[in-house]
Length: 415
Ligand code: NI
Image (tube, rainbow, N blue to C red):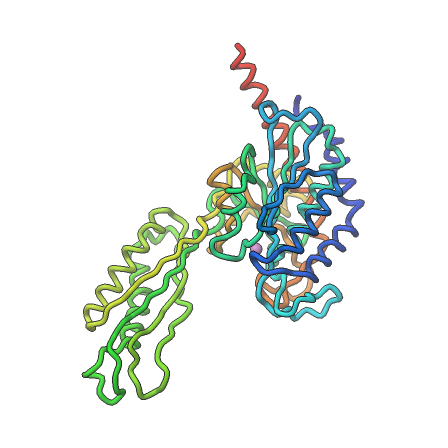
């Protein structure tokens, strides 16, 4: 077993390119039939039928959302041969689509505005291409179709618990990037996305008449002081070379203009790159809230919800994406992303178990650009076969590399 033969790549890519229209149709079907997190029953069923049609063995969760499927070459032995997993997410968002296209969402108020329809079709294309060369693969390919990426806790935790990366030597993924033109990809080793946590303060004062604040403890006044203090303190308490961001998203309190309410609710999100930063947030929130509340005679309760950790991309797998991308698209079309995104992605849960990496797939056409989660989000569909081919080539390279490594390890053991 040596490096993968060039004609293997060619056969896979030919198969993917020949299915271009089918993949676009599939993406459009999925786009027109979006389902929210934890309710992706039809989506899971559709994917299941498609994968079984390719001859993959499907392992579906009993809950009816999320599955993984194995493409197993003849004579596969998990002790002797590697497994490379490829992950797609499958859920949509509670957004009313404003695109006027024939494949616009038929489920009012639900939309694939984060491109998970694209991910599903792309990873299916990869599976289809690889299924065409099944007998020549030196290991197993596993396709993971994960539910509930957009919710907390994300579906990735369920899929890990379900065994989706058990026995996997690497896990691959991509995400649409509407900032990058179609025909380009973005790669970055190391920190790729931020850890994502939520907080919720209840500030407890003493309500009363708006004319007599001296008889009350005004929680609205305290909340404004706390908001200001939090924003100021963040910049003075953490290593300024490592990005982190706190955003207060809601402040709710009071019912009428001449009454001081009893309490105020304030919630927000915190995104961090370093573990020290992430662990330092709660003590800081408590210290600042404690100080501000004490100053004004109020008290507080704090609830923190831990979201997904940050994605840390494996450098070797990122290099494979860059090399495969350069060979296919030209090196000038492989964008080296300089800074991590402060967005969250639960792909990170797989990476706690298995080395892996995510890359960004350029999906922008020449028209106006709409960001992810926009009601106008759409893609240049040429991106689908590009993404499918890059994933397929990368998976083949990893299969061969791991197959050689496992063989060498065994030889060393026998000696
Ligand atoms: Ni997404």
